[in-house]
Length: 378
Image (cartoon, rainbow, N blue to C red; front, side, top):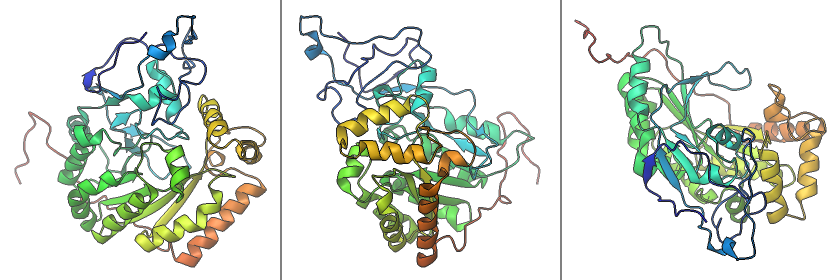
């Protein structure tokens, strides 16, 4: 039996994740979620499972509710030197993501917290409540060099809990005040709430947004991303941002071979019509625990396509589910990967996308004054 979790914000727990079943969780308990199970993470010394002991206690287990834990972070800007991504600095306001996207490559990171990459990732969420304060301190460091900060590189900065916690908006307020450039990736229409800040920053060459559209088919989108907004709402977000003067890109990400790759041209056309001027794509990635989580979902939702999807994916990774090598991890290799790349390029050319990429300005940055520091005289 488990204690009914409160959906309200709690202190950061020290205990490990609740006992995860090693088989599919009953549909009634996981209704509205993406993952089918809650397997133990790879760092756990013990593997646990729920089973019916003959007293029919499984029927009394609680449903998976969203829990949000306050997580005061020690640092907020993450840096990388990966040659196949377009940013060097990023901020993730939240850990875990309520959207529940079954393909999310960030799922395995939840195992570092003692949680599962399955249902725990969608229901045990962490809000970095001091993010804006930390950001101001880090921008005030004497040696800080301004480079574009990317929001939403791991989990969505506009997932549903942002409505209440407003961590992302607080970050944007600091970036606007300091004249610091920002790029956002999201699949949420909630980004339009902050169009006031984003439009002002965009007018100064300091902001751009990428909206992720995986499918225009509402049935497929709902199955893959159970708590994300519909494809139509994402196109509305592109339109709203574009009308407000914010440069918008569409990310066809991830492309799931054998399931959504037939929609590449349609997504690009719809996004272009809505006002997107740039576009990019990423192939499905299945690192670590994600390969099993995705397979469970695929067998449940699309059993007639499951073998084809996995076989096509493996054909683009040298017979493996996933290859972590730079360059190959996001685009794959081989005939099918080449075909996707060619189709994408031809569609971009036909629609006039990516003809001019918006470069954000770095020269407007003004470092904030740290608490207790001397204010400038001039």
